[in-house]
Length: 385
Image (cartoon, helix red, strand yellow):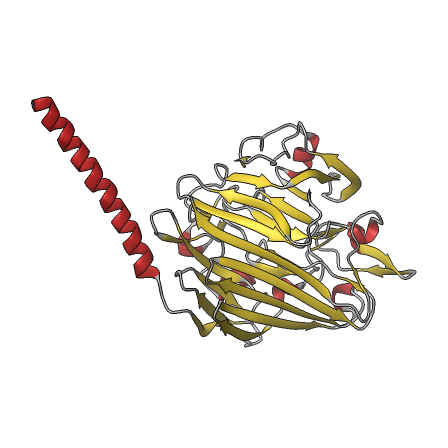
């Protein structure tokens, strides 16, 4: 009889505990649920006294994203864990001063050309163009003053599906060495279905090259530890092999039997210390995966963090995705809430055309001609499991 009472007591405590945990989770979610909104406020000033605005977007489920007019930088993205507790899952700074220091492109729009171009040179219609070289002898992420360091004009979007921002910038002919006046628009849209979409368009008055992307660093633990235990899946059978300067050699390298095989989800840290030559070149993962599938808008990758339960899927129209495992984070950056960003405290998944495409004729073309419109779309889908 005593044993039955003990078992009954244990069962009752367990049931009440589970019920209480569920109630806490529901309360966390309910407390966070807000009216769909866009709030504008000042974020600080540039050295020339230009005021930088910050916009806070909130969807029906309480997911909150903040972005500023400088670089289109996403400064904060708060999503719930499996208990309904919200944390900021992107790296960045608390103030404008942080973003004006040398920063590893936290949360920024990248352009005109995301990733590297060898020697900063490319040829178009028989003419050779010399771009700014800001990564050794190579051109990286648009140059010395790329789209990550310009001020974008912003207008709000609000409809029955969610809220968003339209960011516009006109890049003048010759900026950072690129030909043509480029009219660029990037739309951030936070859906009530817990999606965050990036829609890119661009037009030019001279043939040019374009490869726009978004450079947020994610950490689904709220940057409480490194990202090595995150489970990553990439829908790709090949990568573009690189040399020791991180420039593609032109070879498509099968991921089979290599550390680059993420076709089945595995921990980011599982093979990160491999002595594979490609891994040594990147000091970890810093490569372009060639996304499998013929669909125009297709599944590219997913990430799951087991402790929090946070899960993100990425769909895109782009042919490639750059996975970067935060190899150059070294503890020298103090980010939001005075958190020290130590080695591999964030990862990036940048949808893109391939690095150095203008110099590789067998890569998907990144050329934009007069009369054409550049289109690209990437959607992040947030959930828990």
